[in-house]
Image (cartoon, rainbow, N blue to C red; front, side, top):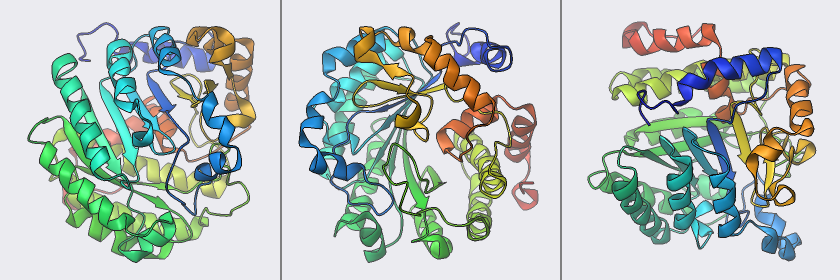
Length: 385
């Protein structure tokens, strides 16, 4: 989706601004996250999604069908970023069919898929099918795949709860690197969730990750989220520990970013600014810049619930699409959705959710200037304030 396309999201930015500040009818989001399934073979210490169907097996039958998903996507129109989430996305049998529907109806410029990498060759085979879809139907779409790397060797397996997971991460990542020769718009990424179980080892983890030469390496702070059923687990590190970890991580990022192509330098610059805002949120417990959750971004659950974000999640659902004839606009423009937007604007919540914060940065002039400064600044002088 290039800038010559009148549906490009940049042309909607003024409308998002007006919706936030003056309450005009919310445009459709440019960033959609879809949790395609809650099936997961991980046993992560930071998340309890894997336990949902162990506790309530019948709930799996309520996940959206492919026909329902097609109706929902058809009711939405284009989005620029299509984030896939789970559970483990690649465990859904019709996952590549979902991607094909997204390409047909949502026409995303970027498709982002995280994975725990446990399924190994099944993941690689699915990615090959997705690449085949993109090459024939959307050859300019960027596909980013992000295996999770929460530590090295046995310590990663301990956090993720599956023996041998670390080796699977390395194998899948190498396959991604190989597939870039087949589809140049494929990005092989790595991601770390910073929790109290790895906060003191960020230098070791990030050094190892960067030694693999990923196209992008990111981190997110472990959060207590409604989506993850982990409110009682105390997984988030304290502000001071996170600040020390981010200083280490940012130093690695700054060192690497000028060696990357423009797209990846831009992504890294956004992340560096995000890390500083995440620190402020943890310390001040309030929104440092306006949050556009429920305006620029939407989250779709496996069961058809529409959320402003996954942090609020089940506690503040905008509505269920099954009750609205699978019509996204009906829920998106409902009184309940508008009520939730007002609550967010009134700062009744604050969180460092990375996916949402990147959209917030786009809507904040001061933050954008910091991003541009980092992209243009020479490596030796780069820093974030």
